[in-house]
Amino acid sequence: MAKQFTEEDDALLAELGIEVEEKPAAARTPREERIIAGFEEIQRFFDEHGRAPRHGEDLDIFERLYAVRLDRIRAQAECRDLVEPLDHQDLLTGGNPDPQSEEDLDDDALLAELGIEAAAPAITELKHVRSSAEKKAAEEVATREKCADFETFRPLFEKVQRELDNGIRETRPFEMKAEIQPGRFFIVGGQKAYVAEMGDLTTTDQGRTDARLRVIFDNGTESDMLMRSLQRALNKDEAGRRITDPTAGPLFADASAEGDEASGTIYVLRSKSDLPLVAEHRNLVHKIGVTNMPVEKRVAGARLQPTFLMADVEIAATYELFNINRTKLENLIHRVFDAARLDIDVIDRFGNPVVPREWFLVPLSVIDEAVERIKDGTIKDYAYDPEQARLVENQTVKGLAIGPKR
Image (cartoon, rainbow, N blue to C red; front, side, top):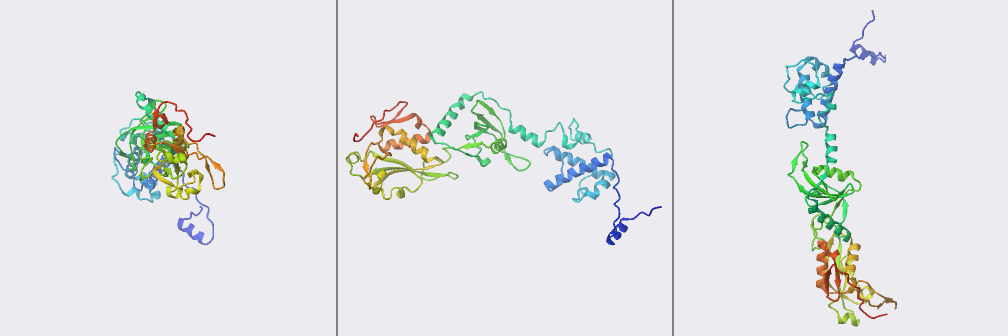
């Protein structure tokens, strides 16, 4: 009869450098394999959450299933003996074992104890309970319905588009959940989305805040998606953007609001030039420009620059601006006052004639009004009429050249 080596014998032989053929592990029954697999799922839960699964109707269905399963394993000596060598987290030492059942650890029975009727082949394959991933996917493609009162929102989308065209608003990459607030606009899936309503903030089991939204889309549909669903959709969409809000920190102000990004300054200057046209209308002749440097620095050495009529200037007004494209804004202002643009020659230091393009014959009060209309997005509907010396609505103003004819 062949001698059977004990574990101590194997260890001794190993120290002597003698290899011992490893004994094949005893084959396990399908039931034992399933018990071990179920216990390993509980161990993974412990590794992820730092605790054993618990009972509770307000808890995740999987945690509740794992808690019932762990009670069963603890209660059955055969199961305890089977998984005890694997229990490096001391899961078998706690809890209140349930002595009532010595049946197989059947998922159907576990679900029945939780009041769930349908059965499933395995905990991780529950057909009647949506997984977290499925829930998230469903939220992110939340069903959209026709917006019954879309005509109420249509003017808002049209106004936002005008403000985008005029440079009053810009699109910027979406950055954080805090940007999702009622009244904000976004671009997601190629459509403008308006957050019309936000429900009360709630806290998830993971300690994260969320809220139900009413989101209106510019194609006339709406969705009641969750805030985190909109956040995920914006993060996943490479073209997802937020649309800046001119009311979240004024475009023109003495100081910026938190989070605003400084863009520059609109400046209005008066010239001290002795040119007859300028001297005659000194309080009406204004240079309007935009700069990203201190205005005082911008006008330094004005007497040497033809753009300043080769003369010193005084600063008549400045308007700080935030979150806006300087070039687009300057072009917009010049287009509004184009009918009053001065046609005047100056000679530079080298004797060459230069025609400056940023001087206008317009009262300062009208420039102030134009800035206000840029802020509220209505400037697109106005133009300056030199004959009336004011901004007029919905009419074309013919250009009026002022200055010596060529």
